[in-house]
Length: 199
Image (cartoon, rainbow, N blue to C red; front, side):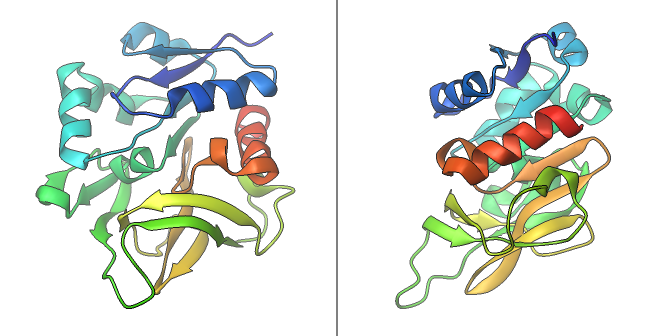
């Protein structure tokens, strides 16, 4: 039986919902900043909500900004945690972890399209992605965010909110979802299950 999933404690909210979602899949989890525990866990999740600079400050304070890019275990970034895996965020011109290439930028509000982007929206997925096995093209997921990454080489699924943005990304053992799997019903549960069983 695999050990607990390490959830990196970056001060974000919604951790209880994430741990409950993992529990429904039969996996224990531990909220931690302990480098040894994170390095040896079977799977690692980097969640996050709030501001990029504050989140990066939290990671630096625990020396996780240097540990995370060196991890060889499967890691899943969620929401802000996804954005932190990329080069930077335009929010306060924040340098991030630089594992994936790109800069998160704020949505431009338009009439009928407020910022943040909040609610259910569709995924347009690439074929042949193990993280998305069993998730249909056009499946709905739950988003809450003001910043997003442009579609690029590491994009595994996109979503449109005025413009197309990266909804799921990945390269090697680093994977990420801009939406909240723990709040996305059966689609989110399937993504978490795929992460835990196919990587």
